Length: 494
Figure 1 (cartoon, rainbow, N blue to C red):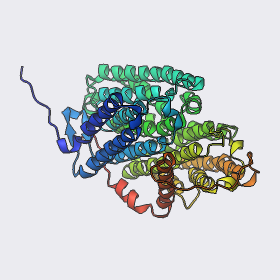
Figure 2 (cartoon, helix red, strand yellow; figure 1 turned 180 degrees about the vertical axis):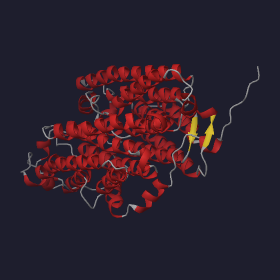
Figure 3 (cartoon, rainbow, N blue to C red; figure 1 turned 60 degrees about the vertical axis):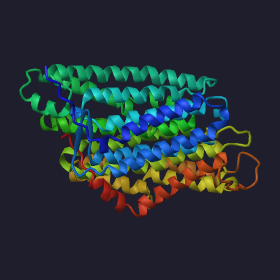
Figure 4 (cartoon, rainbow, N blue to C red; figure 1 turned 120 degrees about the horizontal axis):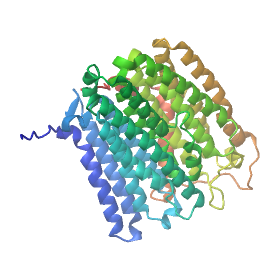
């Protein structure tokens, strides 16, 4: 039997081994050094992420590179998602530096889990093989389960971790069963091969059942209706820095994998899939926005907000066949803006701690923040306005392009429903601003006197917050640079 060594394009594949080696080094360094070297672990993680980021920038994909027989696929779409995922992880690591509870829990373990979860997300967005998608899903899911309950002394954190693990396991089971049915009906798990094998398959009903189960599995991961039930409880119970991380990266990775699956199946099941996802998108955004109105907990409100935004992102999935490049580019632009908005909002929640060191969890606890801590209040106001899709923020431009893709694809009613949902969302986003600026402070403190000291715990978190504010505003005022970059990010299977 002749063995054929798989083709490997090392330049495009380089980000994966760099990040893998870096994650292992962070864990080993934390094991064999004392707790006094927390700063070194922090900077080592930053260097690993930045090095991987640079290697992605240098791997310019003029053409699609296929390595390991389709297990690894590197195109413009992959590279852009790599950059977004790495950037979101970078911001989260910066924010994590201010968390005092890491004095009681291993900071190196936390950073290692962040890096391994990032690795799993990158693997998921860079493959066309269903088995590899499942392996990547498990890599980052196992890390997220631990991150959700990382502070073992927190009962609500342990509950969140258990719920996330149980429901995530069900989702993985659905996905794996769907992959098995597709393999049984076509004889392959490679999406490019499945396109050709479907025509000669005699098990088309089995194939559609498998595709449906895959959609169910990914529906859990992105928090779409009716698979969203884990999202509010997990967001509320997890450490805020972990919530910020899991609110962006996993959603981006799951949507990217869905994009490739939809492209592979669009030739023979477009209408059935479009109708199904159309309905799921409407129900997801509507439920997320309506339930968010009644929330009094800021993290639960942001959780339902995340569900609503998943509904908006599903519009890009519905329109991928008709709108093509505009659909994929609007998706990339949206998730990039969403990274700034969402991580920035959670950064404010962490920075706006009360005098006793506890986080402000209830929305009412933000009363008078505009007077006591004007910098944080202004930042939160910008993020709330952006999440609502109000100009001149990046949130407005992101929604504009997503809705434009729907109109271009003749899904006018879908665009109208999405616009109406955006109007509804203004109520609960602006409520936070009203509480901060119109209500009296809940605590008797003086105006914020913040002195920036580089190298302090707060300094890195403040830098991350400033980056998020600048990114949210600049992508609303000057969106053309990244939009052009997104439009040139081709998505393919071969």
